Amino acid sequence: MGDTETELLNEGQSNSRLRNKSWKRGNKLLGILIKYAKFIGPGLMVSVSYMDPGNYSTAVAAGSAHKYKLLFSVLVANFMAAFWQCLCAKLGAVTGLDLAQNCKRHLTPQLNVALYILAEIAIIATDLAEVVGTAISLNILFDVPLALGVVLTVVDVLIVLMAYKPNGSLQWIRYFEMFVSFLVFATVICFGLELIYADLGPTKDIWKGFLPSKAVFEGDGLYLSLAILGATVMPHSLYLGSGVVQPRLRDYDITHGNYTPDVNDVENNHEKYKPSIDAVNDALQFTMAELLVSLFTVALFVNCAILIVAGATLYGKTQPGEEADLFSIYKLLSTSLSKSAGTIFVLALLFSGQSAGIVCTLSGQMVSEGFLNWTISPALRRSATRAVAITPCLILVLVAGRNGLSGALNASQVVLSLLLPFVSAPLLYFTSSSKIMRVKLPDRSVELDGGIQLRNFDHEEPDEEPQYKDMSNGKFFTTVAVIIWLIVSGLNFYMLISFSQGQDVHL
Image 1 (cartoon, rainbow, N blue to C red):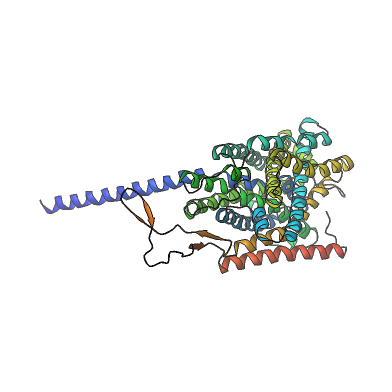
Image 2 (cartoon, rainbow, N blue to C red):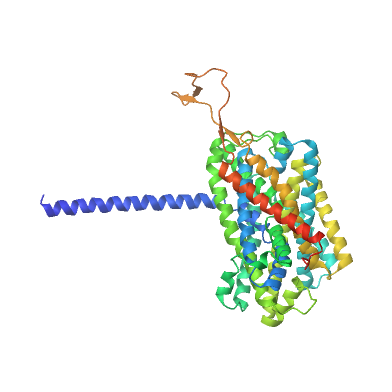
């Protein structure tokens, strides 16, 4: 064989190896994407908590008062939300319990009662925003009286009762996640259309809004920034984020024979379940990736779009003494742009209100089951939780009507911000504890003929204690979490001082 033929043969072999490597990389990437697709759902459900009517109300007020300058607050709040939600996913995956269940197991009864009361207040404040937002959208679209609209929001409870069974099969849970995801994407499409309709002005003004400015920390800018924070990093989302990650891990362990639930464990929402190290390794990275993708695409886009549309249509256009609220932005969109623009905005409000109401009901269920471990039927338990949340909303609507609803919505978000340090402190404590955040390693064994596994007692004592893998936060993440917690607590304390001194921080 000549030199030329040898060179051609070597070149052909080299090209073949490159094609094989490229094919393997393509297959590996395809396999990762297919596996990632199986984890889509929990992150989108959590993202619903960050794009509810409470966000609409605060973002509309922020955009009308400061145009795009408080986009920085939206961005920072989203980063804080992503960090806390990653800790929630980690807690739920490693311990097999949600935040409420961990509180009950590891904290004193007195502290549990206090945290439960704060959690219920947070859910009531959250539900107020969902219920009122949905009632407003029904009032605008179909001229339904606000009080009747509040009553009609009970429908989402029926959907949760029928569709979502956290201790049921993974297939039904995925159907429920698909339904919520449909509402989420409908909201995204609506705001994509709004951005096309609105006259946004120079693009550089929007990008400047993502940079810090004095408007964030002065006067009502601080109040609105805290309201944005409360509307974004909501306490109930921490309970939700730590609970929705478990069904996929549980399904993995059941499929691989690592866990066989009994009837009592199923009825108590698998309270005795502890994920195996294989399930944690298989699911945790994809769970966090899906969560971050959902928060930094869907949730961030919708929150920014609300503020941008409000800034473009309301800034400098509201009358003296007139509050910018959901009614006013609908009116301005309908008159300054088109009737379709106003209708699309209200449809987005309806979609987000329904999805957020469903998710809030689910969070209320987790809180009551986790803290109290009620033994009554799930239907009665969830209905009671929802009734407690709806009652003050109905009273508010009957007393205030349309007047004052905007202030009440924004105030509810500030209440959530004030509660956040108390709810997030246990999360920080649990995820930093090596005793809580550990996963049992499988017993060392040897493989014999016939596939029988036996413990290998060479070089170990027969009564050797089980070995665990420490999955608690490292020093870096603990430090970051503490800094974020101190910032949130400090801003809330500063706002309370401003209130006490009578500074003009009201809307």
